[in-house]
Length: 282
Ligand SMILES: [Cu+2]
View 1 (tube, rainbow, N blue to C red):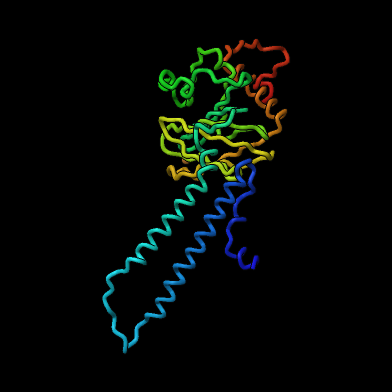
View 2: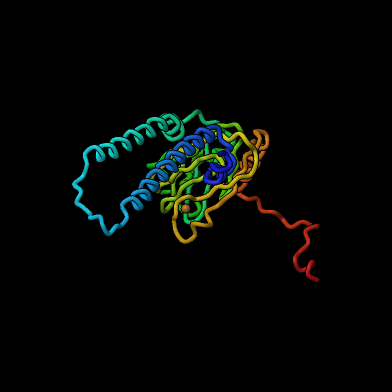
């Protein structure tokens, strides 16, 4: 029987689950999947049966049928009960994963901005706190958003000094509550981490909450799950789940780069051991 079921069962097509709530979402998916499979075979079975039973016979006449209240009530009430039950049954996991009021205490916060066609990320740096930007001070910083400053960072805020951005790659620590706030520069995109069972539309002009806690280190795929234009296929990126120490080391390195990039560059005088291009091409 298991072999027959697994022939129809597409659930193993999912990538491996890596997030704390992913197992519960997979079970919910499996329940809805098997209910749908049952209803599919029931309705098409009845359809097939009636097709044969009431097929044309030259000695049988068709007749007008004016409805049957019992049948009408049954196929209205039963699906209503079923859908209400699915709604109530899935409410807890839905609230825990999607409700702003149920966001967990963040170990790491990251902003994500979708654009045609790519993803940009802003990290709060070593202090764990964002400076003023289009998320933390929406009214004042939205006008600072440009192609080069997608998060509208106010560089006069000292807390912004160590905030750093990455493009099409991001890293998060393992076993940590990662809380992200996502938006879009242009059209609807959908932030999709298949392994972590996370999918959230990001909408221009507002910030959506996203959170997850991944228990496995490694490299995984980020994709856009909203058909957003001609380059939609290219909105893929890789993210890496690191141990706490590797993650901290990466943050330190990115903070140092960001601070160096924002500081005035010292002019370097040519030294005696600097080979000129001319001497190399001789
Ligand atoms: Cu997209």
